[in-house]
Length: 255
Ligand SMILES: C[S@@+](CC[C@H](N)C(=O)[O-])C[C@H]1O[C@@H](n2cnc3c(N)ncnc32)[C@H](O)[C@@H]1O
Image (cartoon, rainbow, N blue to C red; front, top):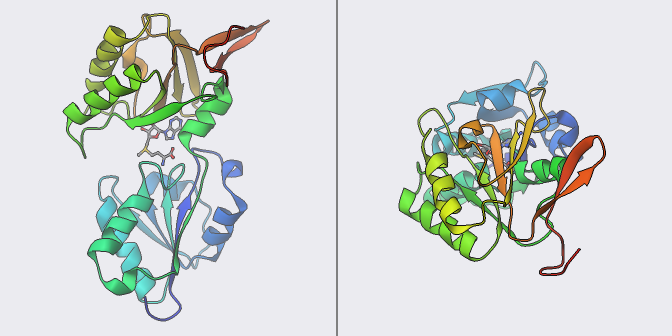
């Protein structure tokens, strides 16, 4: 990278501005150029001298290359990403683009700034579903074959992990979440607690608490994180309040 250019991959968190880190806010305030998917840029109050570079959701590598080229030309670039940029997001796209690009793109003046991920935000709303071993699986078969997704779901069930399902459904992929539930129902108890955490932290947030047998996979959309418990996960009742979803820290112990 030449000149004084710099690039920060900034995690915006899953929704509200007060879930952004001070470090992320400082990088956004300082940036001359902000690059990202349109809905993420719409969430930001940028100044009149800050240039916006909007791109389509599926153009992650192009967006990353554009950000690298801007920084190489001396700009102070914030490449924004929803949630945590390292989880199914722009940090990997950026490093892939840098790896395949010019050696000067791999300089120390590129940093990934962490953010609150959907998984942590949903867990906080639900209680403590990730209190013991868990895994995160993206249900999207855009970037990997469905056979790989299905094998990982099977292994996660076999290993008795709590499963956080990202990208459960979209208009182009409405059926895979039904396939995933059919597979998990064949491998896990129907009484396993399940939560659909939709648009956590946003005005249209919706939490649906159910179990694997009764769950309606059709509730999941692009803004939903689905949490499927382990054999240890349970509901903790609260008088007049939503129960907590708990995966206790100690495996196999009674209450
Ligand atoms: C491409 S992934 C990006 C994940 C993001 N980097 C993160 O750390 O949360 C997009 C998926 O994250 C989940 N997601 C993002 N924001 C969410 C929110 N506010 N509530 C629930 N799930 C969310 C959904 O599963 C969505 O399909």
